[in-house]
Image 1 (cartoon, one colour):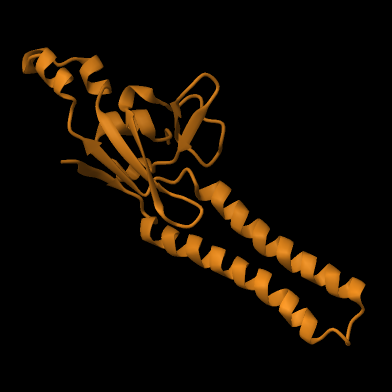
Image 2: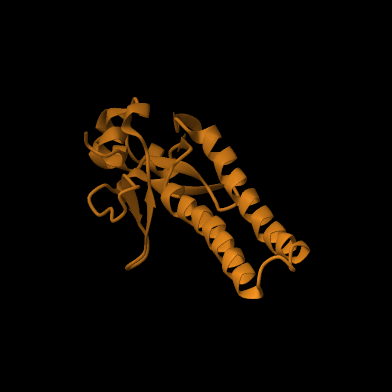
Amino acid sequence: VSTKVYEGTYARKMVYLRRLSLSTSIFSTILMPLSLTIHSGIMPIVGQSAIASVVFMTSISSTFLLQVVTYPYVTYLFELPPNESIQTSQSSENINDSTLSSRRFRAVRLNFLGNETSTTFHLSEADRNGVSSPFASFRLKKEKNKSEEFYVFGGGLRDVELQRALARPH
């Protein structure tokens, strides 16, 4: 059974914001050409095309920008039970740093549609130093040149080891 160790401050608001942004983009993309068709005799076709393209680009770009900025935001972080091999290979008296860093977590983020996606990782995979985005606090080292970035607000973490591994220093 997993234990919730973190809930993002804006987790619920983020879902609503993502869905609102996507729905307004869809509505403006559908309704703008329809509106221009109804009022086609008032403005020349070049003007109509210019207005439609500006409205389309504005609505789509704001939704895309919201996705880029908020994708690293971790809404929930759960600690998973230890692997059986880790638990049985060491006695409780011999717990050391390698055991602590092998703790497993599941980070929940939101995709483009506002649905939850989760990533499971060991704490030892988290790297705070190699983050390239200003909107992320740590990254997970995946394959050769690939990494995934995440944002966790340190004030929401009570576990000091997690703060050191996942949050930005203040």
